[in-house]
Length: 250
Length: 94
Image 1 (cartoon, rainbow over the protein chains, first blue to last red):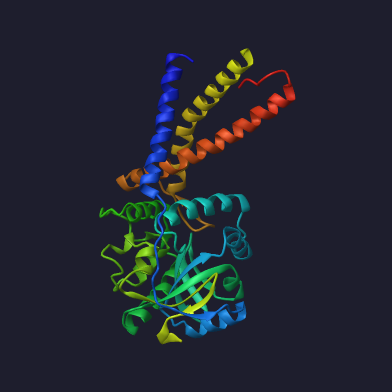
Image 2: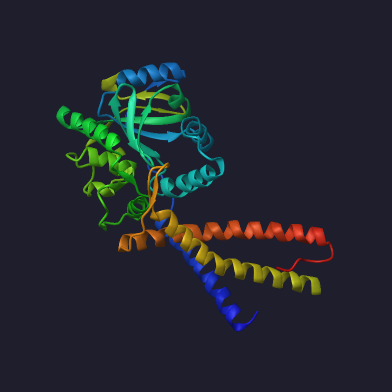
């Protein structure tokens, strides 16, 4: 190789090593230990889980969801939204192994329960999803009660309905990447992010504008901020081992 | 001995070309992906020349560059293997 070739080769190798190093520094995997006191109800069937879930949820509750597996998520989305297999494989792996893993390996998505077995959330568009057996079959979830007045909860449901009709909030990968990096690297930096370009968690923070989930602007709120906020408490959760409830809601 | 030298040269050239080409691929891919906003059925391309966009492209680049490098390297490696198998008379040249 000539001198220029050598220069480009070593420059390329240096950039590669630097990128791996920086990616690890900023997006290194973390594990959050949950030490919530919950009561184990048992390994229920999907029908029982659905019945119990709909019975315990109230409008204004926050749902945190994650797929039972990457394949399950693909299957769930394929049924509902005709997703493409290859793009999903890359997207889910990058999303799960880098972004979700770096903020604590917890839930993928945040939504608000708006009543009538429906939850509203921001994906690439603002969606209303029915909580049915399909949902129970493919997803683990945790339901949080927001410690705020009924008035604020009703206001949040009204706002969710309004944004769903208007479709005026855009999903922004750009802002998502920025807030995940801030959360992951534990920085106090704040950026000038547009209020109508959000991700699922900041969208929930927007419709719950009166509630301060963390000491951050709502545009910077991540799923972890909502999950472990002082302003929320776990009502119940469903995971691979079964159904768990908080004592009071049993 | 000659064959080993040729293989080493080929490997170096492959890695070198991928390393350089990948800088542009990763930058363009990051900028394009981060420029889209909106729904699945109505994606809008909106390029904004602000510091937040530059930061996001940088963050995306540090994720994409190593991932794309390994993908491109594997693809090239398999293509070279196939060419080598077809030719059967030595390693393939790029």
